Image (cartoon, rainbow, N blue to C red; front, top):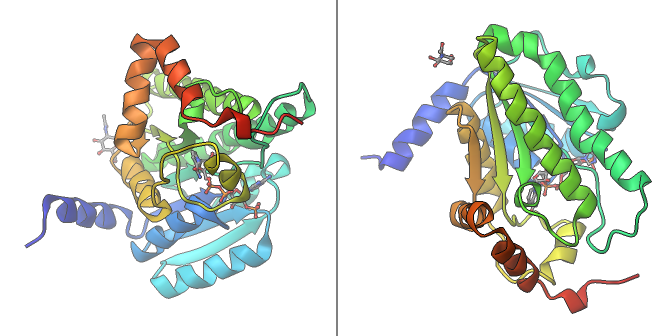
Length: 271
Ligand SMILES: NC(=O)c1ccc[n+]([C@@H]2O[C@H](COP(=O)([O-])OP(=O)(O)OC[C@H]3O[C@@H](n4cnc5c(N)ncnc54)[C@H](OP(=O)(O)O)[C@@H]3O)[C@@H](O)[C@H]2O)c1
Ligand SMILES: *[C@@H]1O[C@H](CO)[C@@H](O)[C@H](O)[C@H]1NC(C)=O
């Protein structure tokens, strides 16, 4: 006998079997885990990232796990032509890649946020625009991976937060526009807390943030589920994202102070 949770998972697996899905930034971290879940569900998968050798490894693994088909496109997202990524049709577009960023004081280097906006935002816009005709036809879904840093200001992620807040503006407005146009394409914004992707950037954060990271495998599954269920937003981990978002709307100064206080500010490099 399956639990309710198990039943829901079966339903989601059936929903994604044979579906055509793109996952960007799938050579490592949460994107890689999403590719493996989709492979187990029997989807047609296209993955992207810059590092071709890693994409080849992830593709091999996906084939073994049961993907209906697996392709990859390698290259940097800020100068990738969105057309080169698209299959004959598309059911779900999962935008997940991020450019690397420094955790620390922002000293006014304007080129960094400029480049990060290209990678983290404008390529999301370009991919969405080229995918929309196919998604309208399939009544598909767009899933954009964001962060709590895209909802709440943080003293040490100024350029990163700039890009993640921008995603909220674009996708929230696009959702409205699609409804007005009567287009049945769902938009899901994923607001993630601290996840154990074990990246250098995250190691830099972990010595200043106290709480324990959540597992990337479960995170990846929750993102896919939220897209398949056409949810407006995903909060993962639920409690540690939802509570700050409630505080943000009611007592923003208190939340800002709390955000500063959970970090060991002395440990952040000033140079
Ligand atoms: N980990 C966390 O704690 C956390 C928290 C909140 C939100 N998130 C969000 O979750 C998503 C995934 O993060 P992650 O932790 O899994 O990161 P990750 O392990 O660093 O993965 C990033 C992916 O993006 C690709 N990428 C980087 N720069 C690129 C570029 N210029 N063009 C194309 N692809 C590029 C990387 O592959 P290549 O290097 O091969 O290009 C990699 O596959 C991101 O949107 C991130 O903001 C993560
Ligand atoms: C939109 O598409 C989904 C998925 O095909 C479907 O379940 C839903 O009923 C559709 N909604 C409308 C209003 O047509």
